[in-house]
Length: 343
Image 1: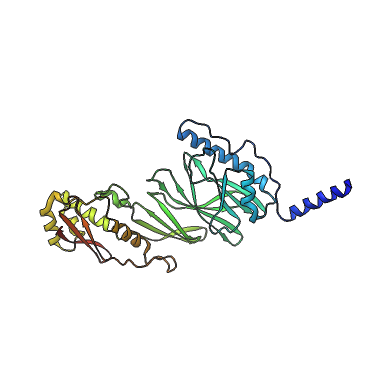
Image 2 (image 1 turned 90 degrees about the vertical axis):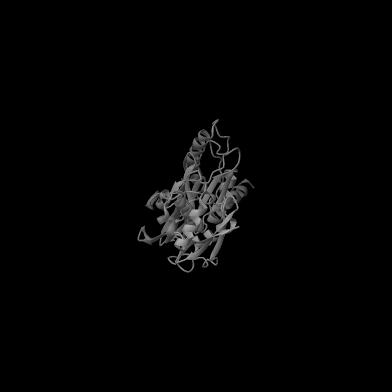
């Protein structure tokens, strides 16, 4: 009877190994233990150290786990862990975030990926809330790559694209220049779109409190292991037209105002109105939809990635005191002030 029992246990163990079922083990120290630190910076430092512990311990406990069972096995090992597949990586690349037990909200965490038949991990949280925001994973032949954006916790973060090879080492292959107020979108492993505050915006009047000048775009296309800038632009923006036009008038710069007006008569009429011409804030809701459409439509983008052509061709923008409205029209590839009308 005892021999039969041992044979049964051995048989079940062999079947479990053949099905890719890993035997969970307890990680020590516990990744879900409360974080130390009385201030947010101290807790973020502790969180970074926690992810370093996690990536050092977790892979050994995941070996033999079938890709389809990875998330379930990891969360059984670490109950406070949320594990989700990264786009393009199939069942082979995951982002793991500690999400319970007083852990500060964070956007980075750890990367878990399969290199051949070996599970590996790398920390995406690099300290003080900075880190890598996953975009997608992709295969190039036998090579597994990971595309991410660098980011910081503040809303005015500087950042860039980075592309890594996922293997025995987490190897950086390429990175873009760093941008101010950066957001990135990966259409594929071969085409990346950066949006950022254009350097020229620093020379323009900033009449709006937020998100002004974040109209720069650069399209990056793969060339071998690296990427080259395929095209750059500032997308058409009614908000930029209002801000630059009125800012130029406020400082007596009629030449700049004229570049953003449809006719010289518009500049003359607006100049006579003087201090009454301050734009209503926040920007009118209709302008937000127009800017989103303008940002998405760019002839440099392939058809599959390009948004619909913007439908709006005219917009009324009230002044702060409600006495006037600026009429803007889309003309010659951008927005211009066409007239000033009394409300």
